[in-house]
Image 1 (cartoon, rainbow, N blue to C red):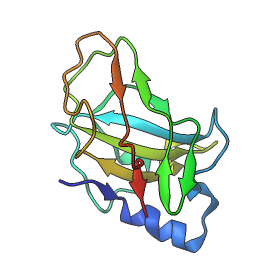
Image 2: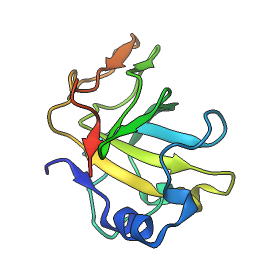
Image 3: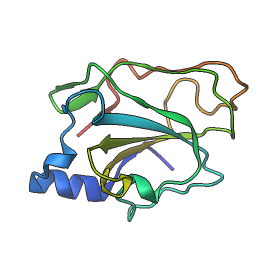
Image 4: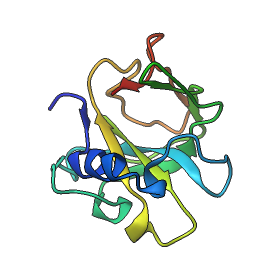
Length: 138
């Protein structure tokens, strides 16, 4: 599988759905990253919300200092500390809101061109370093 924007997120983005915006406040809502074990989860264009995910490894991290310039989304690199669990082969970005995880839209699936992927957690720290050109582009 190659990196992919979830089609249902793109559809809602084109409709102007506020839950699809990427410049939301940081904290309880915002753009987060889930580490994914692809032995448990398989990408599907039909997936729309966080509740569609399985195989999540560790605790999701928020992407801070988000920027959107000329259609390119970027943000801070991520640090997962004392990470243990199954192997991780992909990342899923999603937009957390104040509702249940059945309302958190999935943004993109990333499994190609990400530094340190794949990896097997060993109780140590793992840093996800985004490409200098940005995380993804529209």
